[in-house]
Image (tube, rainbow, N blue to C red):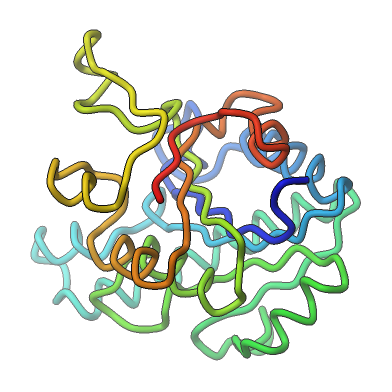
Length: 235
């Protein structure tokens, strides 16, 4: 394998599948199969999951439901629900997992402790990070970058429904041009919506490459880990 330890960022919206709300079991099953293929190959895997399929803090604040900080805390709880679903699905496929939360929830998961997370990875356990960074005003993209730096991951992988980074939205523009490789500076200069700026800056400052790829294509994750040209590399 080209990469020994990776941080996989999944969006909460991806868990919707064909549904309007909640979690699609078929998506969980597909993700479990994809991750198991690289775990069986000896790759250490950590995962950060969003909560947008259940609640998004920004939308809650904009809708006047709650203030932004409260909305973000509600979003963190949503990520824990998704993390528990992922944990259950992965364990059905024979993987050993540990759920670590940035907010203390002893009955659900372990508190996040950096050294403990790294020991779990060394023992072949899939580590799922829930509750973002534990702080409002930070996205799960930022949580993914932060955790990747903390656990010394070789690579940040962002699983999406498109096969890389384009100069415009390929779902709206059929003439959109795909980048196979791009620099952090180009991401800034072109205003590409890869991850939020805090997440991008964290990766850039710590020399942590990012790959954006289509998580919904079977076999893509294993190809990526093998070093095949899948998705778009940001470095």
